[in-house]
Length: 91
Image 1 (spheres, one colour):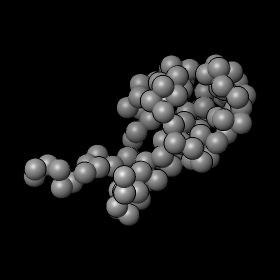
Image 2: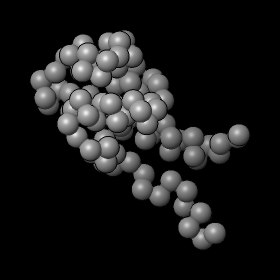
Image 3: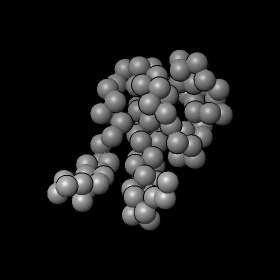
Image 4: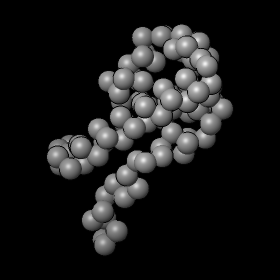
């Protein structure tokens, strides 16, 4: 499936925003990368890639991180594009 450059840009921006939010929440809670990774039952290197925005997270991973940080999924999405497909509203 070909993705338009605009959609690809929005995907990249959203992953970056979510990654930064995860890191900020972890730091706010005084957790190391290793501590949060352990709570999520994942390797420290995987969490590091997530926080760096170098991986596309699955919903399962996002929910696991939310549970470990005691936040809602929507808490990871502040500032993310609300209208990902602006043209679809008119269809």
